[in-house]
Image 1 (cartoon, rainbow, N blue to C red):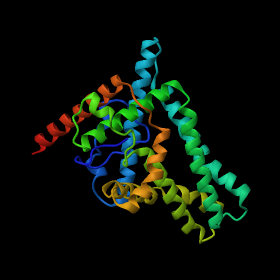
Image 2 (image 1 turned 90 degrees about the horizontal axis):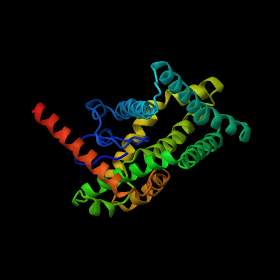
Image 3 (image 1 turned 30 degrees about the vertical axis):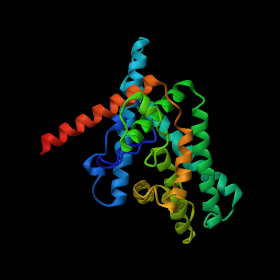
Length: 277
């Protein structure tokens, strides 16, 4: 997800949702302090918002089918998703890298682990995009990016104008994931210099999250601010390229939803700013 430069801290979400919350900016806690604190706060906020949106969506869908979803079911689903993510994106890359490279404290091990993790993330995104409902979400994601790009280009926020805009944006959460993965390779390469045992090898992947998230957050903000710099343009190519996994060309009614959500978010932001003044 991407938000306009003119507003506060950029909100980056790898799980775009076609609601007003999809265009809101980060909280003051995510917009202040050190980069690593800001990045971690941003991820925490987006996980919270994403879960609220998903739970609301699930309840709406279940209600239409006369199905009730309680806290027990929600807690169980979240726990299973968390375990699945840890196994797929943390444990499995470590295991496969260990099979390929015997020396866990070497740069080669970290590099192979990082390549495997990137492949798993992109493969996962490609796989879920085959689901009809997920493709629809990705279309809304594209509609959101088109709306933000049209706004930042000074175009009229109507369907014909927004339709011309790109579905790719430098402050997208999908690109943020790629930056985080690249930063993690660098950080874990430094850890490898100390030849950690298995306990610290796994522990470093958890303990380094604030540093990696914060650094990735600052890097993607920097690249977005300097997107027209020739060197930054080249660096942005893979960041923008990964968004092709999570964006699709939207229909006109989806563009209308994105424009309405964006305008509502801006109005809410202006009302909040006016009340605080």
